[in-house]
Image (tube, rainbow, N blue to C red; front, side):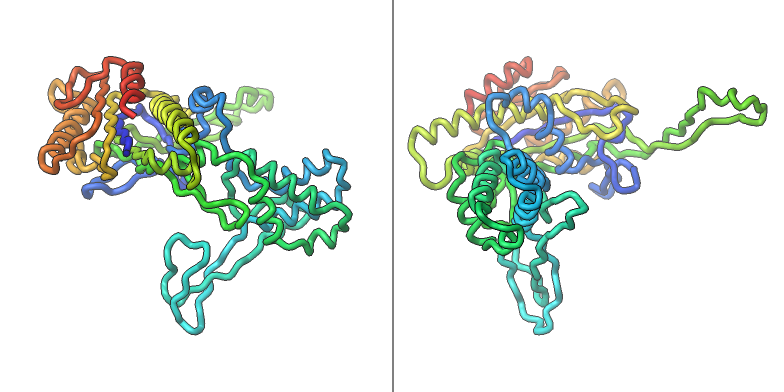
Length: 412
């Protein structure tokens, strides 16, 4: 079953997600320049939001970090392990996430990297480069790792047992494979809901890869955008202390790029994949039922966070905290995800008596109905919420978001 979420959210002048030059991210769509918020930005803002934390406060969640070795080192010291042995242990753990770099094969033959998701191009192989940080720097894994508290505990327990009676040099010679297999045995709890949602890929045998159960599109504006610049000055409050009449002007000047856009957002959640991530291959009816209840709680929390959370980019400057004006949730038995982004291939434009948001809502609903009729896109449940007095045919209208959550839970 698929749960698909479509949103229209208009933002006042803002710079919610910027590129390496500080400019708001954008893209070409329909050969027209659009504002854009990357899917990575949306996912992190939701995953780290206070809304999600509040909704899932009774549920264990994961940590996304490169600081596992440092966590191991500090915990071992708390367990009265000597600093040099704790450091050697941390350096060993730092090798769990192995970085790989591509090298051109002289033979030119086609190789498939063991840990790659897709086959590499012909003529490329991969060489493992273990991350062994110097003792003068923070001890980190070569890749960021999405871990459960149970997995972190298993790492600490395994390392603590393995280093008993060992010297620092002997710790360095411990078998990496043996340690990772032992960690895998010691893990007690299942994958956490956030990892089951967003997935992970780790080049370490100690932790399983998890296929994400949710797909998140880059949010794009329904309208054509023009970038604007805010020219600002900062005045030195104490500049008169110099006593010089020549000390005129600002203490600094600068500019900030921004835009204003109505965004279309799309999320697609595979409920079966989520449950499989939680319970694994071997499961009982009781585990399945518990996973289904967790699924309902997670979907509610995710949707709540998606509605009430915005990216943090330049918010102290712009405070662009606007809520969505339209939310469409479709629950489909058939796993055929459908984005309605093409509703805006021709950009939305304000009309006489109709603002940008109203026109965007109308374009979305027109496209939804078109695809429903042309392709027979029926849904088990189609829930529609909007701040505008516009109804979607063949849908269950929700007067409030509370109604939306109640009806969604019943539909799952």
